[in-house]
Length: 297
Image 1: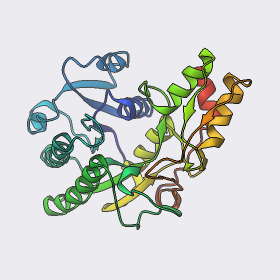
Image 2: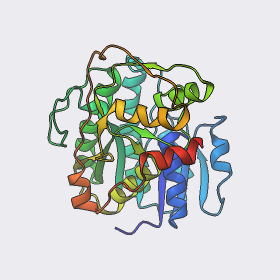
Image 3: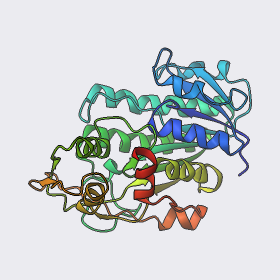
Image 4: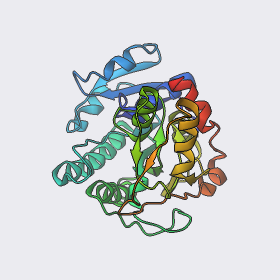
C-alpha cells in the first residue's frame, strides 16, 4: 500500500527514532508521538520540521490523539513500550492496555493499518530454527506482556475493522542504542583496555542493525499481510562468541575476553526470515562490523 504519512509511537526511543528518520528520509510525513519533557525528544528536534511533527502524548493519553492528529495518516506504527525491568508486572500489564488503546486511537483517526513491534522474548527458549508458527512460551513478564499484547490486539483489530501486523524484533543494535546493553558495554571496556567478562557465549545470536530494522518495519507497513506475525531479524546468526571475537580483534586484539558459565535460561536465537522476505521482499543489508565501525570507529 502507498504510505504518504504515518504515526509513530515511541518515536524518540531507540527503534522509534531510527524508524522516524527512515520514514522521513523516504518521503513519508511523520506524526512523532513523544512524552513531554523527555530528553530524547532532542533527537527528533534535529529533523526537518516539514517532514516530522512532534505530538506530545503520554502513554496513557492515546484517547486524545484524534484531536491532535489533523492529517490522514495511513499507518500507525506502535513502538512505545514502558520499561522498569523485565519482570515488573504492573508496568507490563499497563503496556498491554496501552497497546489496545493505541489501536483504538488508530481506528478513530481512520488509519488503514496498525503495525506493532513485539520481541524475540515472546518465543522463550527454542532449540531450533524460530519460525512464526511456533508457540510463544515467554519466561519473563516482558515477554508475556508482548505476547498478550500481540494476541489481544489482533482480536481487537478484527473486531473494530483495521488491518493489523505484528513484527517480532530480534537483537537490535545501532544508532541511539542505550548504554548498558551488551555491545556498547563490551566495546567501551575493550577501548579502555579492560577485560570484558560475559557468559560462555555459545548461544546463537542474530544481530540486526537499527536502520535495517526500520526498513523492515516500513516494508511491513507497505506490504505485510494483515493478521500476520513476522520475524524482524537479520537471518545471519552465529554463536555469540563469534561476534565478541570480532569486536576484540577490532578494538583490543591483545585482550582476552573472559568467558564464564552458560546462561540460564539458555536463549539461543536462530530466527527464520523467509516469511518477511516472501511477503515484502525485505532483507537485511548492513554487515555487522561495517555498522560497528561506523558507530564506534
